[in-house]
Length: 298
Image 1 (cartoon, rainbow, N blue to C red):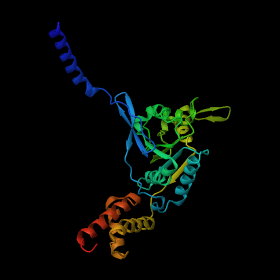
Image 2 (image 1 turned 30 degrees about the vertical axis):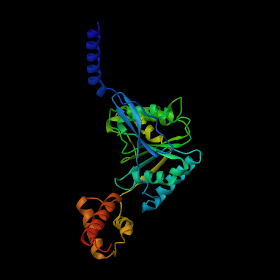
Image 3 (image 1 turned 30 degrees about the horizontal axis):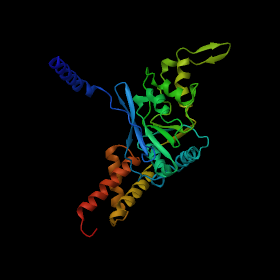
Image 4 (image 1 turned 90 degrees about the vertical axis):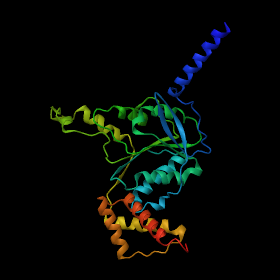
C-alpha cells in the first residue's frame, strides 16, 4: 500500500511540474503608497496589475511649443487630483509631438498629491472593467493611459471602451479617468461604404447607424487636444532646449551656431519628419558625441 501511495504521489508531483508553467502567476495587490505606476498584464484568460519603476525626469516645462494643449490637460488633471469634476481626454495628432510625454510629465507633477498612472494596451481594453474594479474606493487618483489608441474596421473592442467611458449603467468611479493618445481624431475608421445607406425621408437625411456608432466613441472624451506637425523653427527650439538639458549635468560647453543648426536640420531630413521625438534624439546623439570626444576636464 505504501509503495502504491508513493508512486501516486510521484506521478502527481510530475504532473504538477508540467502544469505549473501553464497556470497564471498568483495575483499580488499593488502597494499604491509606494508604486506610482502600473501596467495591466494579461496572462491567458487572466490579468493583473504589475508595479512599474518609473522615472519622473520629464517635466511639463520640457514640452516646448504646445503651451495650449499642455495648459488644458494640466488644468483638467488639477481638477481631477483635487476631487473636482474632470473629463476623459483624447490627445490626437502627428506622431512624436509630445502626446505621451505630456501624460508622463503630469505624473511627475502630481505624484505627491496622489496621482497614479496605469498603462493598458489597446488589445487589453476588454479587461477595463476588471481593472476599474480594483481601483474602487482607493484614496489615490488613477489615470488609465492607453497609448496609440485606434481600431480597425470590424473590431468590436471599442464598444467596451464606450461602455466604460460613459455608456454603462455602472459608471466608472470618481477616482478614475482615461487619457488616450492616437494619431487620428476618429478612433474607428470611416469608409465611404458606411455612407451608401443614407436615406432621404420626408426631406431629412439620416446617416447610417454605422457612422454614428463609430463617431460616438470619440464623443465620449470630453477633452480633445490636437497636436500638429512642427515647423522648422519649432523643431529647432526643441533641439536647443534638449541640448541645454542634457549638457547641463556634465557642464558641457556649447554654443548654438549655424553649423549646429544645419546638423539638426539634416538629422530631421534624414528621418523625414520634424517633431519633438526627433529633436530629442538629435540632442542625445550630439551631446553624446561631444562628451565622447572631450571626456577630460568635465
